[in-house]
Image (cartoon, rainbow, N blue to C red; front, side):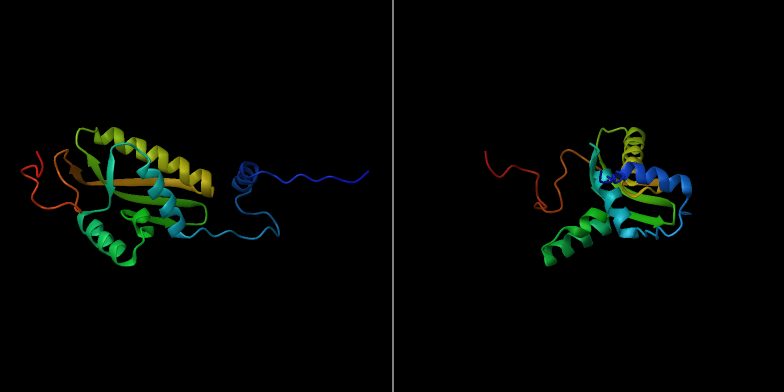
Length: 157
């Protein structure tokens, strides 16, 4: 009778690597780049309702110009996110613009939970801290930067 082997699924492999702390003989080493963790954190933060934009005013303006010139939006995923990644841990800093009327403390808690879950699930790294800086509040009657400057009167009646 032929011998059958089963491959371990990703969650099982992650659990084994956490328990052994990378001490398994001959298994190799996995390095996760800072940019990968930043993309995961940026996507997870954007999933939370009440997050209008990411990054400070200058970062958003420079990013919009860069996206317009290159025709891409890859940089916008990590805009407003900086990370520090070690062998087993990661720390994340996020700059947010929130929608007016949203509880900033509740929003920050939701962002922290979602980012922590996403980063730990996808990378196996322990998230030690997530620092959130709220740079601005988006008011309902404010136009986005891409719209015209004069919005005082409607153009069409």
